[in-house]
Structure formats: structure tokens, C-alpha cells
Image (cartoon, rainbow, N blue to C red):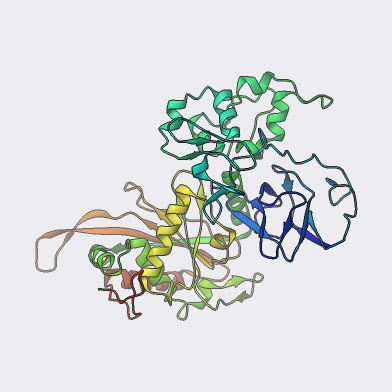
Length: 459
């Protein structure tokens, strides 16, 4: 018998959400087959079978689980379960899995589809409903609306026209939450009685289910408060920890990026991928690892830091569904085209899918992007476990005097560096920013050979 335990997926969450079982209770599975989808505050992970066996599920969909918790067992040939089906690792009986799935699960896993593009076992998003009959149905327009999303529509009075206007082929509850005022508890939830025998009111249930709702919830008398999404609460925890543990300082420089923008347009055509200032900055930052190793190191304590072998650069992505920091790996040694395609994929994932923990982990320096043209400077937080974080503002026009007389309009940005003052001083921060400024103001064609997506040499 093999126990399926929840792995530790990140350092920010103490518990994860069991979104979907991708194998049925009692099903014979082979090693490597997908079993279950777990969702953290920012990503989703699919666990696979370690060996052949028969799956015995111990936890229902929609339940929270902690790292190390046993959520299933794989029984070998002839083996019997150690306890009754549905018993958890503590021996306490858990709610049985809902075979129909109605009212208890989304039609598909987190993000709408699994990595293979399917919408559930034996079915696809195009089918409009899973082969096992799990919730979700198709409207005449061909849009699949999951059962939890339909309940959310009914609770908040969201008309179908507003849902169809989202332009999504698959609509989940999380897609509808931005359509209502945050933190507002629907009247039906506030007045509905709790489950029999619990003595819990609808308002109390809302507070208990705050993670599911993606809001902080409102207890009795708190219906007017604005709640934070589950994603934003995790951001808040990281920010609090950063300010509590890291004595950060900040330096900023002005950078003329007129030539860099022209270079980016040429590179976009050459590598056949979108290249802009973020892509150029990621590559330039990665190439500074050998010259400034301390800026990429991980603090061990207040007096020592562990150097990094490669520059893994995190880049903030926020398209309205929460802030994520996916990581461009080995940024200093990879061609610009690969970096550009990574960042494009991250933006598409933030819009249409769900990140994996491996996309978000392992960064040793972070770049925060501030794309509003009115922002002239921004101080990023230093992520716990890192020493530095860069901030990049959008280009803005600036009139400058030319050496030979007269004036010219140039494009400039503010490049900022927040740093752990225990390890980096002002002089070092200025030198690091100076090296990045030089790389952006006088960009040179990369020495690393580029290839196109079909594997041939770039034009």
C-alpha cells in the first residue's frame, strides 16, 4: 500500500485546496497517471501515481489539505484498505465523494483545462459536460458555465448577458467575482439557515468558506466591509513578512531608452517574438550574475548568503486577476527570443489559464513592472529569500538639450532597486543600476545565436 501525501508546494501557503480528482475512487491506475489537482493561492499542481495500483480516495473535492497529509492510498493486488472507505488519515470519517458532482465542483480543474487540454476524465471543454456527468452545462451560445458559477449568478443576480460578454468559452465562479462589489455578502447567503445540526447561519457559513469565495468574508454586522481575494491575502502575507524581516533601502536612476526601444523593435522582427523593455531588462539583469553575485544570493542569516549558480529572474504579471511572479530561468545564458517567448507565455497563462508552482518558484531576483504611463517611480518589496528587487516604469517623453545646441525629445524610464541593506550598500546599488543603465542605453546584438520556433536560424 502506498500513501499519497500532499507535497510542500510553496513557502507561502499552509494549506491547499483539493480542486478535482482526475481518477475515480476504486479505479485501477498505472504509474505516472494523473490522480488529483491541488490549488495553492497562485497556482495548481497535478499529482500523479507513483506506481500501479487501485486508488482509494480519502478526501472529498473542495476540501483543504495540508503538506504531509494523506489524501489517498494506492492498493496493490490483493491488498485491502486499512480502514473503511472515506476515512481520513486521522481515522475521522470524511464526506463521501459526490459521484454526480453537481453543486460541489467545477466542470474542470483549476484554470478551466488540464495540461492535456481536456476538461475532465473522458471529456473536453468542447463537450460542455464531463463524461461522468459532473456539473457544468452548455448555453445555446456554446459557452460552458460551471454549476458553482451558475449558483453565483443566481445569488448575485448576474444576468446571462454580462456573463456572455466576458467572451469566455468556459466560465467559472472565479471569472464572475469581479462582476460584483468585493466583500458584499448576497442576501440569500446572509439569511439562509445553516446545515441541519450545525447551528451555523448563512453569514457564518460565508465566513467559514472565505477561501472558496475568494473574499475575506463578512461575519454578523460586517456586510459592508471590503474583502480581499485569496490571492491578495497571500500577497499581503508576503509583504508583511518582507517589511518585518528585511531592512530594505532604495535607489533609482533615470535611463534613456530611446535606442533600446528601437533595438527592441528590430529584435521582435528578428526573433519572431514580442520584445520590449521587460525582455531586454531580464536578459541584461541575468548577465550581471558573475559581476554582482551578492545581488542574486539567498540570505542564510544576517551575516551570510548562499550564492546562486544561475540567474533566475522573477517578473511580475498582473492582468487583473491578481499578481503573479513567474520566473525566467537561467536568464543570463539564454537567447533573447527564448526569454521573450517565456514572458509571452506567462502573460497568456495569467489571462487564460493557471500557473504551475514550478513557474513561480526558484527566483533569486525580481523585476516589478509598472506599465501606467503616469507612474514615474516605484519602490518594490524585496521578496523573502532574496536580496534585491528591481522596478521598471513605462517609457515617458522628456525634452533634453543636445550637445550641439537645440533640443530633442527622448524616451526615458525610472529604474529602481530595492535591496537588503544588510548585504548591499548604496555604492553597490548605484554600480548595479549603472551597469543596467549602460546595457539599456547602448544595446548590442546578443552574442548568443538565436533560433526561430521551428528550430531554424533567425532571419
